[in-house]
Image (cartoon, rainbow, N blue to C red):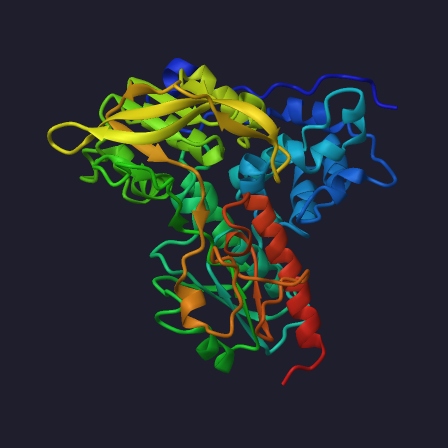
Length: 466
């Protein structure tokens, strides 16, 4: 058995330096760290970690190559099943997926699968002369054409897998750039756009065609796509923000996290005055929510110049859905966590801009349907917090456009597309996955849906559909 060791800690940029810009915070493993960590893998005959990976990466296989210093083979092994490893290595919650099932993790720290996936992906990027980036060879090209709606993680994964199988795949992206939530929703300091662009280029190198400025449901309906394409995969995400519907929520300087991060990421608000697209936030910002998006919005606010940034979360630290490493970084950067706190009303100044958020203290009661203890208001515990801006980060629902323009498509009351276990919708030949099915979820769960849909589409078309 391998000697018990702790996983090497990935170095990060100092707090005082990183909060002044949008450059990436973690710096990645060194060659020595990567090899040392990969050697901790036991190379199990029945690796449980793979069962925890929604995109079915041969984890022990790629770790074996890393341990030998053969990084090119490691990248190739990952890309047998995952077209977006540099993205996964940065934003996938491995601690709740593959690493959770790592045998070594039973008595110690699990192997740092995510950090190693990032390392080998970055090695590929930093060594462009290697043969890794060469086009994937399609062994059995097919004539069938497949349409994919959305170029986010679900769409890119589905498109890449189908292209590998030889199908003619075309992706329709509603925005003018590719990447979906990877581009507009995740800040530069957590997922650099150059990384997203490189991963998209790799998918395109498999033969996938991507057309931007194509809002499906408007430019084409799903029915119209089915006239030209043998199958359709809908991975258009969840871009409709949720609000709490409390008094004053329509005041100036109260943003949805979706709008806020879109302005920063897509309109380059963080590069003002180079880009004339500022976001008015003032010096005191409150972010409502406890997920990764809330952490992103809070840390963005700090980098945009806010002096006081608060996270308002109605449960305790233990119930926060955000990744622990993102919470840790937010704490390090000075974000103030006001837990067991629920906003109930907003108040404004004479100009109509939000100036205070009125909150009530909560306590935890019995568990609810999610398994987390239900927050219960404490009577007469109201207090007011002075603010200049508020960002509401409590989730998103799917844009209703496709559902409304596709009467045969069955959806949940909240707008999510209803699918079978194989991601099949109520329309034959039409599949869906990612946030349009789940609501706002993780990047890797969306990728898993895309992979499952690609398998189902291949099975469907292999039966000789007319």
